[in-house]
Image (cartoon, rainbow, N blue to C red; front, side, top):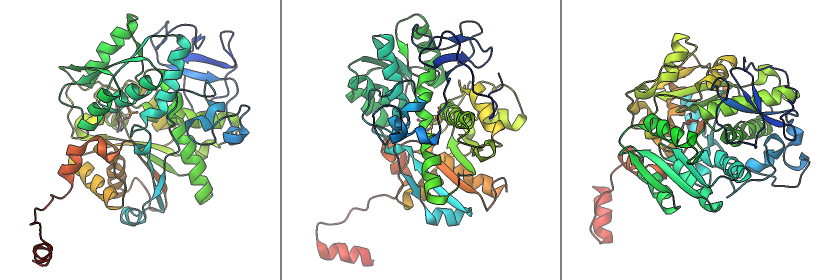
Length: 427
Ligand code: F0G
């Protein structure tokens, strides 16, 4: 399977349920979507993708949908999703900030920041969970689980709580930001801290899921990516409404490469329906931290597969990942759109985090990687000065208060006296 931008609309196999089915991206095998719990292909273990006989046009969104429902947020796109409504808080409809000073400094025609930190639990994961937990209900499973660098666990706990389901999360010990653990804990997840990195946590939870103990809601689950593809729909709609064109490029942080895969999938569906020309698909440009950059390595070396990095390290703990499980979907997404991938240092990430914060946009370190990557690609001349760019910021500043505190200035102690405060300010 090529996952080319202009693959034709697939015709529905016998197993389809109301025009929706699962297909293996490697061998093409198809499966009924909601009869059994399944994360990968029974035949070849390849990644699965949700497919539709009737891919959406822009006119199908919001009021244009066949069913009544929300006009904003993830479920605005219900015609492109397996259900009309999910377990919702609600999510999506995040701001596409203008940042004129950063735009000027970076030197591109247009720069907008799509701030996914403004979702209910403070990250884009909510978009995936609203669909994923709905599917879990359809399948009738009892307990939900994920491995996480933090944000997935926060979202799973909140949406599981909302859906009245038990939740279990596996976290890499000592490597998850404080805000995220606090969320998972208060929303009621059972939290297991594993003596290993994220990839090790995912290995364990995948095995638990394979043994039928839990329903897996990592981005390996194809339904989660359905929710996340709506990031791309929102970007296209809003950017076009403001600028009359689509962005040339979307720059995003990469960990497990779920977003890269999901956004690319959404664009392919719009191309299938004729709503979007293949040449109008934005170039997907992934950014990783230097200490955890297996996707960048694969793109730079032209490899068909991504090599798992056993040792990973970065201050941007959300993307401290050495084995991006969605790589077989994301590599075509980057390559077929004419995008690229770049690695940035922790110092560059912190500088970008400060830069965004200075213009009022508060993001966690992993999120700032997108802007740091754009700056680097401008310096290298890979991104041209006439490009219209959207940087995705994936999580809120308060997710990682320690990192924010370190990146910001120190509070200054002063006496409890107005004259002394004025003296201090003048001094
Ligand atoms: N940014 C943030 C803030 C994240 O939390 C993640 C992933 C990513 C970027 C990477 O996104 O995996 O789609 O490429 N966090 C996961 C988690 C792994 O467990 O919260 P991706």
